[in-house]
Amino acid sequence: MSDLLERLRGRGWRMTAQRRVIAQILDGDHVHLTADEVHTRAARLLPEISRATVYNTLGELVGLGELAEVTVDGRAKRYDPNARRPHHHLVCARCGTIRDVHPTGDPLTRLPPDLRFGFRVTTADIVYRGLCPDCADDTRA
Image (tube, rainbow, N blue to C red; front, side, top):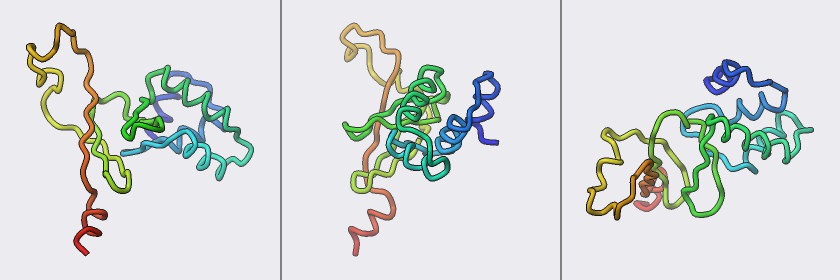
């Protein structure tokens, strides 16, 4: 059983066939799918699943704190099941591959008090950009 499914069962979340398929698709490391990508993959496994069911389930999982909404490209929201462990994202500027990264140290302490403009900083969303190994290899050819 997947980590996400285990967490949801532990919460007593009602597990319909549609919810199970969505949770299975979203489980794993470095998963950052859009709602449309979740729907496409879910429809392969459960052809009768509706787009509305996918959107409603994603919203419910975000509300439960089991998924994080992430925007790294300025466009589509992506859903990250790694919502319980603080992390940053590494994004390929060419192909859009996204990886979770867990650098050491607290990013909240890296912003000096004189640059906070009186804000009480509570979270930090950091995105590192570059080229993944495959895209970097393409530029050498």
